[in-house]
Structure formats: C-alpha cells, structure tokens
Length: 367
Image (cartoon, rainbow, N blue to C red; front, side, top):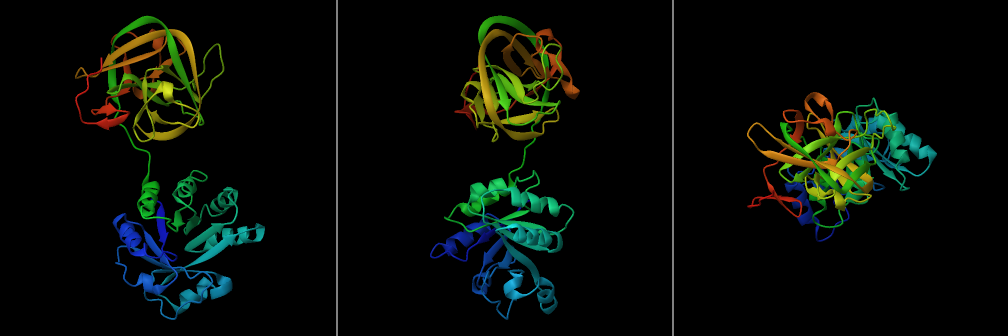
C-alpha cells in the first residue's frame, strides 16, 4: 500500500472540511506546521508535524512523527534521544548534486525521508529509489497535485513509498487515496469451446500497438459483444515470415469491444495514441497499458463463435490469417484460422450490460 499524507498547513477556511474529508477517505497522515492543527485529530490517522524552517515546539506530544531539517533543528538521532515517544524523519529539498546525495543518504538511513524536488524531471527520484533499494525506511515525495502523485507512485515501477500533497480543493484527499490504492484487478477468465467458424469476407481490422512489451501469456480481451470477450495474444511468439512484435495485438474488426483500465469497454475504432487498454494474462491478472498507435486496414475476416459450459456465447471477428492468434487454457497459443468446433479458448463473460462503455444493470440484447 502506498502512503498518503495531506498537508493542511496553508489552508484557510476550507481546512476543517478538508480534514474531515481526509479522515473519511482514510488518508494515512495529516501534516501541519502547528501542533494546534494536530491536537484534535483522532488516533486513526498519523499526526505529522512538519515545521520546515520554523523552530520546534518544546511539547511534541501532539505528534506521532516529526519531520525536521537537520540544518535548522539538529540531527534526527539527537532529537530521537530527547523524545523517545516520537518518530523523527528528515526533510531534504533536492536542488543539485549535493542535496541529491543528502536525499540518498537519508533514504538509506532514516525511518522517514520527505523529499521535495526542484526540477520537474523524475530522474533524481529514480536515483534515490535505486540507492535505497535495500533500506527499510519510507520515502515520501512532495507532489504538486494528484496527477503528479499518480506518476510518483509509479517511478521505476516501485514508485515512491508515499506522497505528501497540499490540497488545492476539497476532493483532493479522496482523489489521492484513490490514486494510492489503485491496483491492477484480476478477472475471472472462463474456458470457452469453439462452436463455429466462418469466413465472412473483407472488412477493416485494427492492430493495437501498445507502449509496453507484452508477455507471451498476455494479450487483450476482444469481442463483438460486451458480454463475451476472447483473449487475443500479442505478436510475442515467433512467426516464420516476419519478426516478432511483442507490443502488438492483431485484435479484431473495428466494431469490436476491448477493456480499458477501469473495465470500461472501448471500441477498437475509437482507440488513439495515448488511450489505455487492459492487458490480461492467462491467469486473469491485469495491467493498464498505453496505446502508441492503432493500425486499421482492410483484410479478409474470420468470425469465431464460442460458448462456456452453460451456453453463454462469445463472438470474435478478426483477420482471417494463420498468424493471428488467441490464447487457450494453460497459455496455449492457437492459430485462429485453424480453430474448429470443440477447441478451447480463454474468454471473459461479464454479467453487466453496457451503456457508452460503462457497466449498467438494464435490458440489452446483443446479437
């Protein structure tokens, strides 16, 4: 779980409402420069005193954690010896190579390191994360807004352990918690049996080129109907007449649905550079990947019908060619043009109907 701290020090009349929202959203820590803002807080949230360049008060009993600048307040070791009931952490503003080294030292040695980076590049944070890879402390990075927080959570895949955000408006606390708890979901894939295949002539199909390497057991779910999708594999597996393209999925006809990162369906035809699709492996594990390009071209098409053991159907229309493949149980790679009734493929059969891509409980007949 990522750590979320909300800095209410500079808030005016919205402070009370923001704190209440933060408590409701289960923010991990409320940060303030004045102990008076920490005293009323319940024990369900960490009380973090962050005085920056102000002197420390004598009484720290209202704080669970105190973040200090050693140049202003002294070393964390000395402070911890004098206040054994409080955890101390170090603040470093990274503006050059020297302060970057200080940040690395803090991340390796301190229980808490609060880092603020002057420049917009993420390279310094990457260096700190790498330098502290074996450390047990937590890196909390100052974010300017929720969008930046989302990026900080993903730097070097591991990301910053936490984010400190000064909210600009009521609602930011909830958005920050959502960003911190967002994790790839798992889908329950179903074994489907092919019931029929048919050559249906020419049409437009879409190749989805992602900005990520897709694994050999990974692809995207595609189908003619929102309640029946089949797992199409990427061009990760060798082909006799062309190089592998592990970023590409030869997905299907342009009318087809696929899933985006929030399980909303998207038409293949509406995907663009910068869109997001859901990569899914044979165990149902998912991750959001960005689309770099979509190639739409006229090709012969093949219609594939399948159903699960209860008879729930799925249909996939894709390019009628041997090198276009889908995935079967156990990660079996199946050439679509060789599929025949009785063959097993992997699919996903959501129960909800869709309206503009969103799940909705209503009557909807797709055929």
